[in-house]
Every structure is written in structure tokens, then in C-alpha cells.
Image (cartoon, rainbow over all chains, first blue to last red; front, side):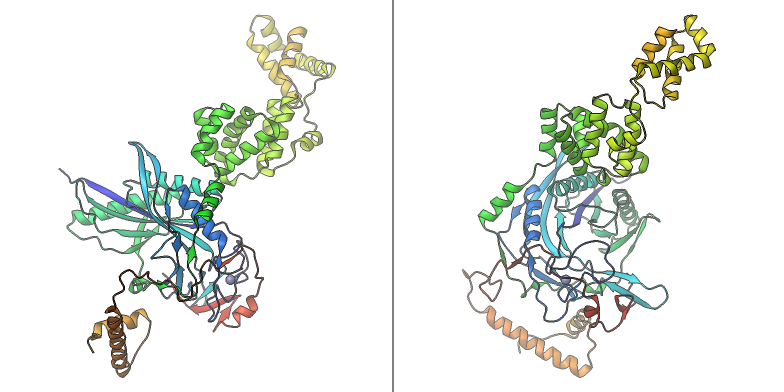
Length: 476
Length: 97
Ligand SMILES: [Zn+2]
């Protein structure tokens, strides 16, 4: 019988914190500036510059730690991680090795086999590096330090995951927690959340872990799942051939669905950490910790329960609505404006999900305002527009965030309730469809539906189908 | 000298520090490093049980900035320090992972 293997996975997740400024200087963290326009002597590593810690970074790191059931090192400090690479202007990265701000936590994930806790070894604060652009024409690289010094937290899990599904479940849960806290937008594609996968395999039942590799360059959940499967297969194949797995960092190429070892930093794996003398220790008082704890917003699990209880939303729907911070925000704000939670939920669960799927978008990318959805709901509630028109208007709101009231006025989409006008249109439809009329009179009741449809079409949807049906029956 | 720095260690430290040393410089550096380690050994003789490890030489903690943008675009000034520059960026020898 073929040997059975178990995959052992731990993750190192980097998350860019949602601060206005960098971790150690007053430079902006805004995206998209021209190269090096968000830089200063501190974040370009000029001699004699002095880093000063952004208080918000400590508070966001604490918030994430508390939400992931971590203990907090109330005395913590920063260390220098030494390596040479042009994206790192100081030749060291300021990070935390000895006393990371959070430690010994964990979050619960759902797996096909039931609930499971994935341990969090530690969370530490550190700074991001700059960006290298390789010049196509000249033998040189260009360095942009706009991202240098952007605050990150690195969340190091225990090697508690056993499959790609568990990895995705963990990341998804972690992302939601952080998004709910407002600590980061956690966009993998844009790099505000990055996951490195540490993976090893061992024979089922073995006590010792196998040799692990670290996989980098994973920028979507799908790429992570493929990388886990690919690396598992590669390591098993090596072992089956009687070869050894080499402990190394590998770069995943998602187009080729394979990885290759990274070389350049190879000889610098010895980071010679030491305490950063430029930065003084951080002491977190009990009061400060309690203040952060008291400020923690409602997280997903609590929100889900509340939606069911307070708004009578079914379990499945509440799960979808709270499955994205953006979606939950839109739901709550719109409900607060129009007082119709069920209606709001229907628009989000129906048309919104349909359009998201059609556009291949994530719920986090929703950009319409709760005000406009609330207005639309009011327009349908008071009978100003019917459901068909409402769907058409909603699509405009979804795409362009238009004001439905103005839009309906401007395009004359109000439901026509003037019976005389309707009767004239119905008469035209009857005259134009003698076959259906005689079918109906001959007993084929289905023909009525066709005639209603024709009338609605002639009215460009701006009629109440019930009223149309009534007029038709009367005239026939 | 109690500590002796081997040629391999010297080589390794050189690689980590990205330094190319001549043979004489290596010999001198080996002696200096051995003396430093001897000094650390001497410090290690002290009984420090019950003494809190010192994290910083100054008795200062919690020095923070508020999260407010204080710096504007000073690219031209910053790039004056660059040994080479191109298109608003620092220019370095081609570095590819
Ligand atoms: Zn700066």
C-alpha cells in the first residue's frame, strides 16, 4: 500500500495597517503617489535620522491581538533585523523578535470535520520595505521608498493547518476579523494582506515534523490553495524518490503552477537581530489595554447573532451579509435610514450578489451609498416605481451610485397610475393581438399573461402589472 | 586570548557584512573580534541573577507620534543624497530575486 502523508502548514501573514502615516515618520501611506514623493530622511534610512513610533500602530496591533485571543506583552520593544537589499534603505528592518506585542492566541475555524482552533504563535509590529522596479533598458533597478516604513503586523500561526481548505478558512476568518476592526482593508491583490506558507509533509502518524519550505509570492486565495497542493505534491514526490526536502524559501509562479527556490537572500539568512537603540520600550498599562478592549467593535459572530435576533434575518442570509465588512456596513446603514431590514437584505442577497458575480467583484469593492439604496426602497414602498423598474434603477445605483429619485424623475420611470392612459395602451394591445384575444376568449387563460406582458412592454415597465391585468380582464 | 576566531568564522562574518578584506585586515579583525569575545566572557562572570535585563540605556519609554501626516513631498531634497538617480527614483545595480 502506498504511504499516507500528512501535510503540516503554518502561515506568516503580513497585514498593512490602516494608518494615515508610516510607522516611524510623518510620511503619508497613501497609495499611488509618484515614486519617492512620500519619503523623508527616516524612511530612506539617512544617517542621523530618528524614528518615532506611531501610537496608532500599537493600538491597532493590540486590537488585532485581543480579537484573536492573544496575550499582550505589556512591556515590548523593537529589534533590528539585518540584511542587505536595496528595498531596505537602512540595511536593517525594524521589527520585533524578543518581545512581540501579542503572543499565544488562536482563532476557531470551521472545517468539514468540525470546528478547530488554529493557534497564533505571535503578532509583531514591523515596517514594510520599498519597491524595486527593474529597468528594461539599462542594467539597473530603480527604488521607490514610498512603501518603506508603512506599518505592518506579521501574524505567525502555529503549524496547525493540515490542508488547503483549512488554510483558506483560517485566512478568511483572520481577514474578516481585521476588516471588522478597521485595522486593514486586507486586499491580497493589492498586497495589503500577504501570506507566506510554511509547509512540510510527514508520514501519517509520525511524531516529528518533516523539513519545511517557505513559499512566497501568493496574491490570491486561489493561488494559495494551488501553492499548498503543488508544494505538498512536490515534497511527497521527493520523499517517494528517497530524496530529501531542502529547507529553503521558494517563490510560487501561479501561471506555471510551480515554484522555484529564491537565491538572492540565501547567504543572508542570519539576521543578527539586536535591540534597536533608537526606539525606547513600549509599556502598555492596564488602563490603556482596557481602553482598547472597550473600544473593540462588534465582530462577525456577534453581528450574525444580532441580525438573526434583531432583524429576523435567516441564518444563511445573515452569514452572507456579515461575510464582508462592507456588506454589513451597507446593510446596517441602509436599514437605519429606511427601517426596512428585510427589504435591504433582499436587495443585497438578490441583485447585489447577482451583479457582483456578473462583474467578478468582491463585496469589499461595493461602492454605492446606503442613502441611494434607502431611497430606492422608499420609491418601491410608496408605489412610485414597480419592481421591474426598481431592478433597472438598482443596476444604475450599483454601478454609478446615482440618486434614484432624480434618475426616476429624469427618465420618466414613475409607474403610470392614470387608468385612462393605461386603458388606451391596453386597447392598442388588444387590437394588435387578435390571436391571443381569441385564445383567451376561447378559454386559454394563459393568453392573459402574454397580453399583460405586451402591455408592460408598451409601457416600458412603468405600470403595475396587477392593475394592467384588471383592466385587461374588464375589457376582454 | 581565550577566544580564537577561525578562518571560517571570519569568512562568514565577512559575507554577512558584505566586506572584502585583505589577508592582513582579516588577521587584524580576527584579533579584534577575539578580544571583544574575551571582554564579553569577562562580563559573563558577573552574577546577574535577579537583575532585570536592560532594554534601553535611558530610563525612558512610550515615546509616540500621533498618526498625522507631517511630511510633504521632498523628493528632490531626498534624491540629492542618492549616489545615482533616474525617473524620480534611487538607481542601484540591477537586483533581481
Ligand atoms: Zn518618512
